[in-house]
Length: 171
Image (cartoon, rainbow, N blue to C red; front, side, top):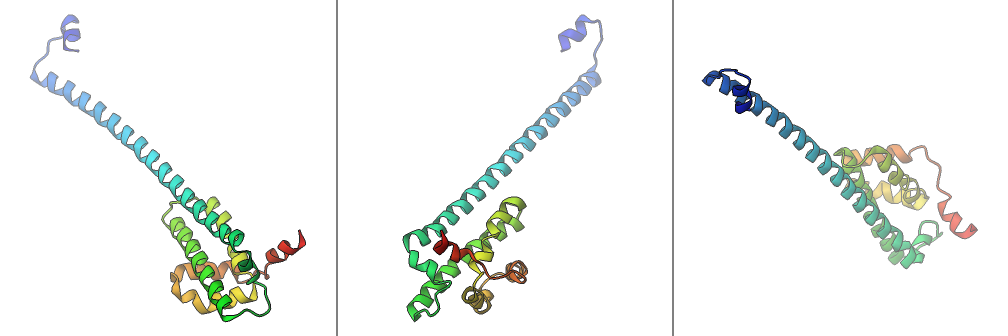
């Protein structure tokens, strides 16, 4: 650039060189900030993708429990259950609701989109959609984040009991 200025017949002094250096510094700084913003956007996309992958993995594991132990599905609607079945039922719900709490926390941290979360949260009306599971929730919800409990309560308060488990028999 200096050769160009000399070629054009422009005389330069030390102040002129300093001004050119400042302009170049500003251009480099702007380019660096732009590059960092692109990196940050990409990191956020990767983080959201990892969160969705984790949610999917946890959901598949939850679904697999019913596939691998079909008798668990019947515990939601079975008239009378043994003490051992109560333990199995309670622990399955403890795990499942902890998973829902994780998903809710990810939503609170903006690590997952609302649309994605809402799809996963629909299962609350299934998991807590029977007399037995709602009774369990009343007894054990103290084990969860109070704000999460409020969220869950707001989702199930006016919801009718689920027909989800009847669908297993019907199809």
